[in-house]
Amino acid sequence: MVAITRGLMSDPDILIIDEMSLSLAPVLVYQLFTTLKKLKEAGLAILLVEQNVHLALAVSEYAYVIAEGRMFTEGPPTMLAAMPEIRRAYLGL
Image 1: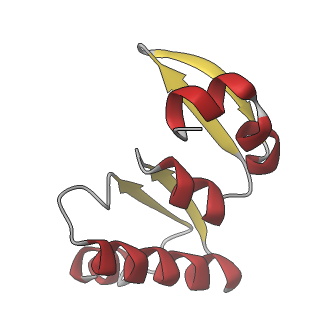
Image 2: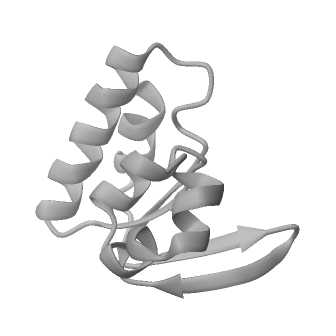
């Protein structure tokens, strides 16, 4: 939360966040993603790099999937979540 607040202090056009959920307790991760969703709803553009695919897709309007250093696919979250290869590799389904 402190890092997000610090980033917001300069009134940015875009907030760039890298691996925000790494090594945090699940309750904190949920709170951070709730905060991101509120910021997005307030009109702030956010570039999120995240390995927690479930939560990242839940707050995204558009997503890119990078595998082995290359862009694998891109599109709206609902489309990506429905792709069998994405479901197997990243969503555990």
